[in-house]
Length: 388
Image (cartoon, rainbow, N blue to C red):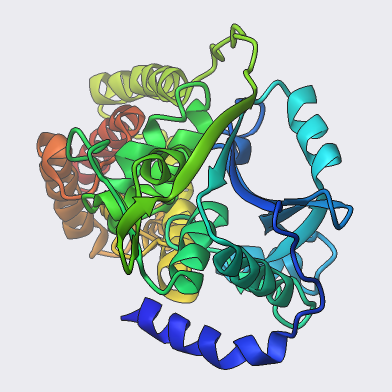
């Protein structure tokens, strides 16, 4: 439904765009797919852009929906709230290409099989979209990003005449599963995503939604067709590998979340074993562990309630209860409230159920958190016993 609205809007504004620049008959418009780069989390998924090359008119431009500005007003606040503005930027193709080659990232160019009128309409739309008053949009990890924008622009300009072939979908994967395919060398990035993003990214992705990743834009476009009055024609006329990345050996970090939490478990587990043996409780351990869990819970609750990230319905709140933060402070008091005893009994039961059913929850919880959940369970039992 939203694409029909976009098409109607585009038809309305088309006369207003004007023919400031008419493409020559030899002009070409291509979709570029830039390979992943493991140096940063945000580059691990690759990138997409549109190239408009018109030698007769003397320009070769990149239209890039992946631009953001650290200097925009309230950048960090907007980032935290999930209201980060991205924009469509224009760049020189040569500089853009050379930058990605320097980073050793594969560049695949798919030349669109458009007639002169379709090319002109697409170029006019991009020109209009690149104007300062039109270039900004709210970025979303999986529904509105540099890749989905290209798909949506083509659907708008071609009035939903593009028919995609989803034969590349060979198994049922969720949005989170698809992210994991690219995060093998980013264990902490993978952990952060699994911690902060909720149930929304555990939905099984359709072939259409696979295209939030640049690689799948390239695969979907490769076999897509455009409906015409005479039948159909391929969306892609030609595919060119502009640069093939040289294979690199990426060194996996030895300090992974799993290793860190296992070490934490053994250190505090040893202290807990001594507490059980001596029938006592080490107060600073509980203050540290439960205040940490409570702070994480406060962050997750904030992301759920106050932001536009995909952070709603986060099952990590089953172990990271925000109320753990004030409870940890109450444990430090000499005279402790009576409700602490049933609180930690209930928390022990909740953690026990959480751990037993860890792999069966609708949300895919990160396995590295199991040792921490076990530690919280152990300390909850110790606290309950001490309060008896």
